[in-house]
Length: 356
Image (cartoon, rainbow, N blue to C red; front, top):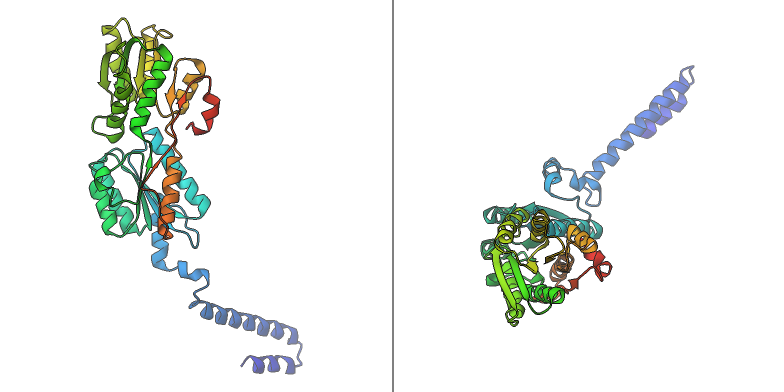
């Protein structure tokens, strides 16, 4: 048909010859586009495989929770216990950054400190079809059903920050810190600051959480060995700055003599420092914390905080690497503990890379 048209176009010798040639060429071009389009519709190599109406709808939904996928990568999910907790927020940010760098599709859910929400989040990630899952529990015990759900769905799991010991047979690895060791280092930092005698305060984390319980155990493992150390107050402040400030204000009023305070995280240390400053006792009481948050790092440098204990956010990196290893058929350690250190003004710059 094309040949016949072209022949007719060349045979006519009229004044409109050039115009008709253009019409014929345009028609031929349209026919070629039609043929190429029809052939491409069934191709498995073209972009058209991701352009179905159903996929378009899915992509619109993904824009809120998921990063853009790159061909050939894994789809990984992360259930964060609470983005208001700075360390957890930092692990969430690292997760997204690493997934983007590696070309993995990812989805992140924030449980906002609620265990029932976290179970819903994990079920949502399962329904989205994740290949692997990282969980930073709101609470180790309450998170057990979420681990069970992912395990039953055949999805490998890595746990970070707070352990879920009752379900250790169901997850591939735990990546975090040895919180007993962390508590022991907190106590050693205190002894380095004031010596082997003095009146001290211990500000605990949230009762029932593995991190808080283990840090308390570790702290007492060391402090209880020294008869010259008197604990004048020991209060749980739920890893909360405002609660720690309020509690420390009352402790200061009841105790005119305090030599040092160790707080199980830097949020609480920040509140304690504020209370001490408001009471006009800055410089008279040594304060320590844990996590090496950016504000605590600054307090170390300006002398309002005497020591800190690291809790490297790179624990997320280790969990993600382990998860991918499992997906690729490899074996990983059941527990990956980050190295911990005591940080003071003198060695702060050495640990600046861990600040978040």
